Figure 1 (cartoon, helix red, strand yellow):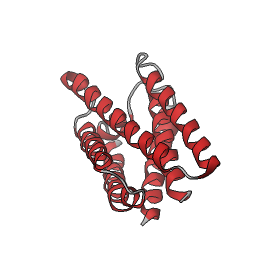
Figure 2 (cartoon, rainbow, N blue to C red):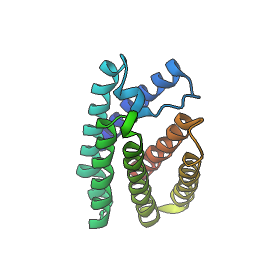
Figure 3 (cartoon, one colour):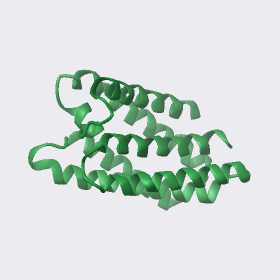
Length: 175
């Protein structure tokens, strides 16, 4: 079951890698913008939905139970998944920009709190603790960078999700 998470993360990075290849890293568009609008949505939308389903299945079905997740972990994950789905449904355009950004902030905060508490509570051994703490520091920097304007936003968003996925993989494969 834990390999379902790895498969979901691989799908995510194939999509993001193609976005970076096609549009460049300096794009001010979000990943959601690239996935949900334009002609490319025919390719990105199904892959994004597959990622969301597989990754949610992995997180709820294996990840949290294997880490003895508490009720607040499940609540944080539910909030993160629901709002991630809403950011997917509501592209960042026109009158929905503020709404999308608010939902994205909820996703970022809930997922950051989730992995922070899991990494601090569950990390085993000095390497896992040091690695998890370093990733958490980097993820915090990524969150802070996201607040400073829209230039290089895609880079910041990619950095944030890279740290999120790295922590998930670290906690998954160091058990």
